[in-house]
Each structure stands twice: as structure tokens, then as C-alpha cells.
Image (spheres, rainbow over the protein chains, first blue to last red):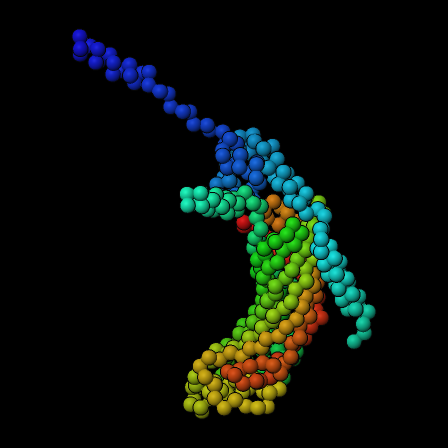
Length: 113
Length: 246
């Protein structure tokens, strides 16, 4: 009897064992894509860029073009919002540079040597 | 003490984690420049036939720069524009030494910018220049095979005479390069198009103004005359690829 119980117990223990976590094969669900969606690609460490490019390519091939495009659009918009206006001294500086270059080229054209 | 350790840990965590979530502030640029200097000392030299000037050795500059964005609309960096010429010199009495010439325009630009559109940026740069010219000859200790005693010193004297230096050198040591430093300034306006949020193409136009003097060359501690070059008040155009790394 003991032997029968042991022989039954061992196979059933395997049979009812915990199922393995299924590996998510969708590349668009990769943590690196989630990170890029949240913080932008530029926030990724440089060492992760090749992995990001590989995963984003796989994601595009799996129909996630919109996801990848949205990452770029968000990033462009974030940069645009940050620097669409010149603040503080930077506009004065820009004007000075423009004036210097303008007068240089005017001088170059008009001054006779 | 325990509290202080906790405080230290939290500050350290902030410092370590911050760069992970920050947008990149450092970028590396690689490209080329185009300008049109007048190098009369080389091209119009009557005594020495320098390598014939072409677009690569006269007009094209190699460009490397790195920038740090310290403000939303401003960045500061280090920029090098380099002109190179190499070839064999003709017209010397018996030898044909190999000639190297480099001109480095080293800049510390301060650049302000704004985004015209999400992918398009306009930038304005003003920078001091620390220019350095360097000429060296690679010649044999005794240049002639027939043993008439033509030495490195003779080669250098012939070169300097061709630049109008009448004061001959008595002896040349093994390190044989003449160089000159000067200061200048430059202003540029640029247009940048971002292909990706971290890669951009940058086109700049502006001017270079250098206070180069042909009499301020140095050769082994001695002041000598260098070539005539007109590198002041010249327009310059640069094109480069920008890569944001952190």
C-alpha cells in the first residue's frame, strides 16, 4: 500500500505542480519600451540604446508602429515645450549674435578692398 | 547616527537616480567645415614648391565638438575645426622632405537656441578662438646620398627663407616642428533638424576672425617667420551630425 501511495503521489505531484509563468512574447510590452514611453528614449542609458533599437524594431514588426511613433512624438513635444521660447538672457544673446553676423556679411559685400 | 546614515543614503539615492530620469545634457558632434582662406605663403611661394592646394587641404575642415546643455535654451562646449595638409616638398637643393601642416581652430562656444518646430531648432553661437598652426618636416639626418653634408638644418633654413626669414638657424634639434598661436573670435547662426529625438543634423554659417601674424611663429624657442595666410574675416559654413549621449 505504501508503495502504491508513493507511486501515485510522485506523478501527481508533478501533474499538479505550479504552472510556469508564460513568457510574454510581445516586444511592445518590454520594460525598456515602457521606460521610453514614460521618460523618453534620451533618458535611457547609452548602453541600453542598442537593446532599445532591437526591441523597438521587433515591436514595429509586431504591429506596434503607433507605440514607437508615439514615443518619438512625445519626446519631440517635450523638448519643444521646454525650449520653444528663449528665456532670460538667451534672447538678447541671440539678437547680438544675429546683429554681429548681419553686419559682418553686410561689410563683406559692401566694403571695397 | 542612524538618522544621519539614512539621510546620507537618501541623498546618495537621489544623486544616483537623477541622471536616469533626466533628459540628456551632453552631446557629441562630428562633421566638417568649409571656408576659403588665402594661403599665399604656400600657394604663391617662389622658392619652395609646396604640395598643390586642393579643396581637401585648403577649404575643408574636420569638425569635432562636445556640448553641455546647462539651461533650457543654452549650451556651452568645446569645438575643434582642423585643417590638414601633407605632401613632399619640391625645390629644395638636394632633399625632398615630407611636409605636414595643421591649423587648429579651438573654440569654447556659448550657444543659445530655441525650437521653431518640434523637430527644428535655430541656434546662435559666439565663441573665442585659440588658433594653432603647426608645420613640421620629416627629413633624413643627412639628406643627400652623395655626402655633400646637406642637413636637417639646411632644409629648415630653406623653408624659412621661402617664408621671408633671412635669419638662418645654426642647429636644429631632433624635435622639428614650428608652431604659432593666436586668438580670434567667431559668430555663427545655425539650423538643426532632428532625425530622431537624440540625433540631429546641424548646419551653421558665420565668420571666423583670427589675429594671425606671420612673425609670431616659434621654432625650438626661437622666433621665426611663418607663411603668409589670410584667415581673418572669412565666412565659414559647418555641417555636422549631433548625437545626444546623456
